Amino acid sequence: MYFTDRGVEELEARRGDEDVTLGWLAEQLRIYVDLHPDDEAAVERLATWLARLDDED
Image 1: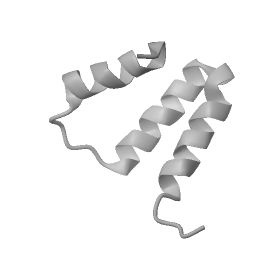
Image 2 (image 1 turned 90 degrees about the vertical axis):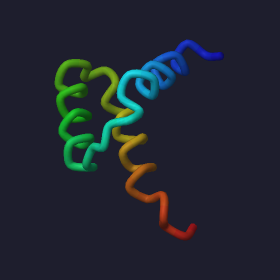
Image 3 (image 1 turned 30 degrees about the horizontal axis):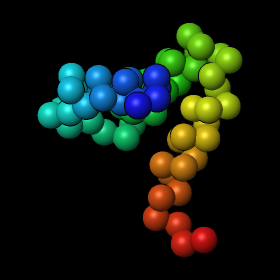
């Protein structure tokens, strides 16, 4: 398991039963980038990937 996988596992364990909106998620990502600007590129790539999941390439 990669180090980053532990965060995903923790997220699922702690909040996996919760329902959230994409608006809420977007706001949390904005807050995270404000606190960690060096991670902006990765967050933007993740957000773009999530936004385009249904696009046919």
